[in-house]
Image (tube, rainbow, N blue to C red; front, top):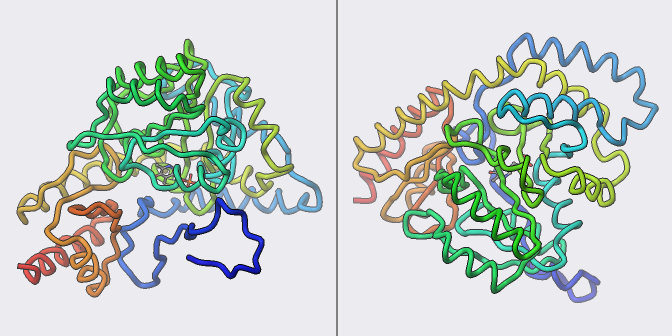
Length: 363
Ligand SMILES: *Cc1c(COP(=O)(O)O)cnc(C)c1O
């Protein structure tokens, strides 16, 4: 994207494009890793009920510190990992993207590194916040060679190190020992290791939450957008040492999280069993889709998330052919791969049928 010269645009924003995953109506939308299952009738009723209470006080600013929500999130994480977190360990914002932006604002002074291919918003938010970004390396199988990573971290000496696990767009998980080693590498150069666990609920692998007790250099970022099936509400959060959270209070905008968001996020937490029940269904569907792709002779990267990265001869042609058949998936800019989110059964069937057609056409 280019801007006219009369516009006094910041130099670091020249040449950047807005985040632009297509949103097309009447499509089988399998391009943004959303949870395909809408809120249950019970959750919808509870949200509606709570909103009528919130509405009575919409003339007032919300709780600036979102204390009740942060306490609820701490309890949720404690239930998962046996940790002993409380609200001082938790920060919440409008999606984990805002959490990540706040991390850059507070801690980006010496630059950041992440291991590509990974979540494209990490380098984008880095650029927007004027943070120098370095691409770390991944191996052919998308794993991280820890020795190489340690050397790169020592050379670059960034203040932020990003690891996404399960990784987007590959679906692969970092080994727990890798996280331990990276946390140590972070501590050694005085950096924070930011573990983006947007898809953790879909994975059997141990979470970096286990590191928080003895590693102040670790920040775990999570979201309600994926497993919680709550992307429309925009709620993300982090768990970290209380000093990290204190810094978040400095960079956040006053009253950043609306009363509406805080209230419905709490309701969603109360109803977590129903929402998270979709995780098991999606994992089963994922395995069924792996099998269907293999039947089509398509190579699939092992995934512990709610999406699959798969190998195709000419991604751009296949992507367009799928779109022409009403199925929207993601071209993640890798030369041999496309990414598909796991949808509901009907969507998954439509995708497989369309892909069969597209592959036939490409031969
Ligand atoms: C989807 C995703 C997010 C979530 O962003 P929200 O702002 O919470 O919706 C964060 N990190 C990664 C790696 C993701 O794939």
